[in-house]
Length: 378
Image (cartoon, rainbow, N blue to C red; front, side):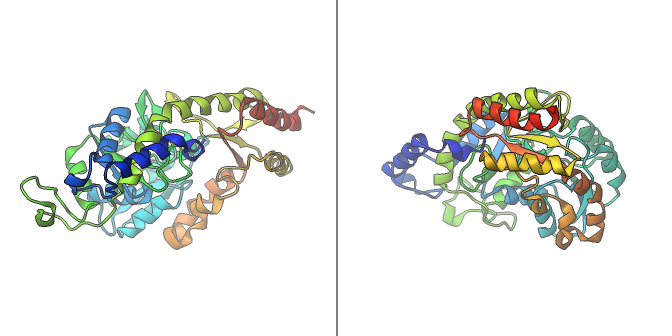
């Protein structure tokens, strides 16, 4: 379920208190007019939750990817490898800094194909971006081995699997640097927003300065006379987002628990009749999506009709495939990237992603699974 389903009285009270405490919406300064620095507190709570040394909330997940790429030293004409099933934002961030996106196929996990990844590495490869799509982890053990062998840094795009884990570690914390998204459709939300996570001080320092016009926030100087070493940009978030982020983060465990209950109803009742998305060993999903893989187009159409009639809808597959498969992004990945996405497009066309909603209870998911399984029972 996305976090917006749980936006309510807690968020409203937190925002009201922000205004009662001075109404400062900017994350820096105005010390005499405020009682809290909410964005800074949000950072601390992200570190505690995800067990990282450093976190940095930023304006959105897309900017988080761009900032992280720049912190890794990726420059124009460098190659960055990522996967063909993805939201276009990852590729946009690569293109926006002048680097070249190199597109890999996906396997039955619907995440990056390790064999194809190995083939795509060249002397120009300066970063690899595995993307944990629709709640489920990539094969991080193999990706980290490839990273170590080739001395290529890993940027984890964890915008769609916040709360998921691999070998007991939170996704987004296994590589050199990771990113999250808190947009309105994500598992927790600040409306727009994202975060960068890392355990490397040098990467954090760059990101912190770059996202804030190069500000070092030198304690020896007032902000208006602050020092700087690098040219930056503005990818800051406001105190409003920080306040909401803190409240939503406290709801994450509940969301994960409720997601799993609904997911398991579908899994228990449909896995004997349908091919289900493969999940990596030693990984834990955030259970935001249940994916059926069905070759028969007539049965797919019937499933989609059931989902529509019962007000479930789908999540990206097939409703938004053009924004989630590089096959459709010639404008960003070129002819070669489109070609590298042919097999992925073919696979994704057979997939139906069932969203997990809090507004639907376990009985609703039981009814849904009965309706869908009946398509194969008789």
